[in-house]
Amino acid sequence: MRIKIIGKQIDNDNNIIDELELVTNAVVKKENDFMVFDYVEASENDEDTIKTRLRVSTDRLVMTKISSLSSTLEFEKNKKYYSVYSTIYGDLQMEIYTLEYAHNLNDEGYGEILLKYRISISNNAPYVNILSIKTFA
Image (tube, rainbow, N blue to C red; front, top):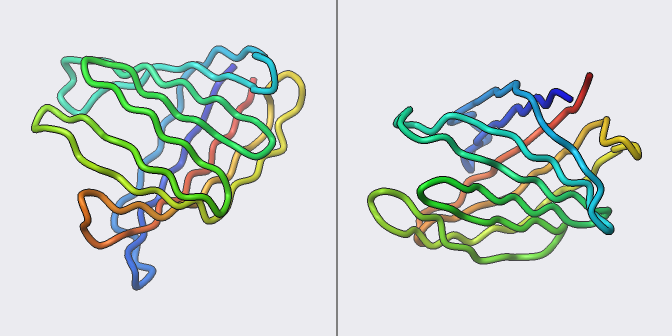
């Protein structure tokens, strides 16, 4: 299976701050009420790879990034979660509020996931991230 992730970061004036696109191979499996996707992406310093796991259910998405530094983010519509994002420079406190979350995945894991959330890192001004995740053959 292939997975395509398009991400946009938007400031409070609806200006796009940053955009990313990743297309890579993914392994999918069913785990209880979750559809689980595992894929690998390169890190910013190119010396480390990041293994990402998406656990997708009807009303919740859990994203875990595993490398020399790891983090877990949880998304559930209209709910606030707190997390720690570890970097080589130290830990950052994050507050995440999910604005929108929906998916139309079939039983084999093919389909699309849409996620829009507000994030504030270490009490800085919040911004909005939008992720579109599509799976295909």
